[in-house]
Image (cartoon, rainbow, N blue to C red; front, side, top):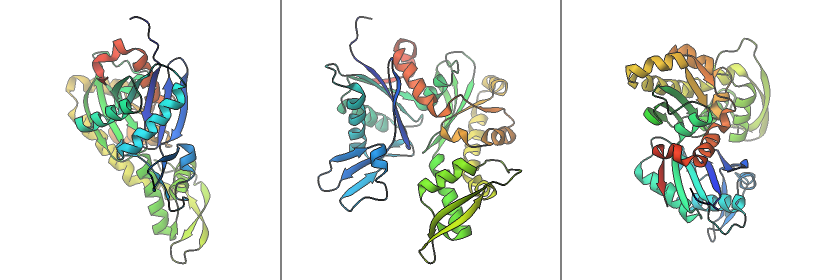
Length: 337
């Protein structure tokens, strides 16, 4: 093996949040995937939390943008700047460039893969590795992916939801749908606008989802005061939203995730189907925390679904484990140095 002076860094480049893990230190950073750019010279002014506080509030010469859309790079230059910022921030003043591993959605094209690898190398990595998100999520959730039996994982982040069946360290079959946290928030905002003539921002609609949202009808209706802009008068107004409202609002996006899940199940080789019925579906990603979603999936598919421990961190944990054990996982990875 020889001595390695390079730090090993794992990055979960999510549509909504980025997490950075450093070998021996664990997760050292968790920041929103937002970058503030100056329009006059294209310089990056702020990244993460600082840039997020500028979203929707910036003066004309600053643009706060989200460089990732639906789990893939939408703005290459901004993504590279963001990676540079992360690598510099956690790498410190080391003489040696770090080895960096980044996860990508299972369905990304070769072009998109090269874009991520290229951006990572230009951002200052010595070697860049890619790992598919469902694999990373499975490793992080403690699923024994190397065994010859089928494991099903449903990973739902901010931009995309992916369902994959993993066996012998690889993805046997997968599907993804660009419906996840963000689309669920949008559905909440749309419903409130339609029912109450109230316009609310993305932060508010996410809050509503987290506080009183439910994927199943609730026995006791919870209520929440929401402030927004009246769509007719344009003035601020307060409305009381109920969990029944949220349930109705999000039925459609959740239905899309479930039909995608069913499609994957129909494509699974019969030998692996019985494994999945025995072991169930492992749910990872922030959207897995939506109340009652596991019960809804179990009800709709007939296969037990359960939420992994600390679902939001499964992917970053998995990338961390993979980069620290490259020899074990090398078959499942893409590399560029």
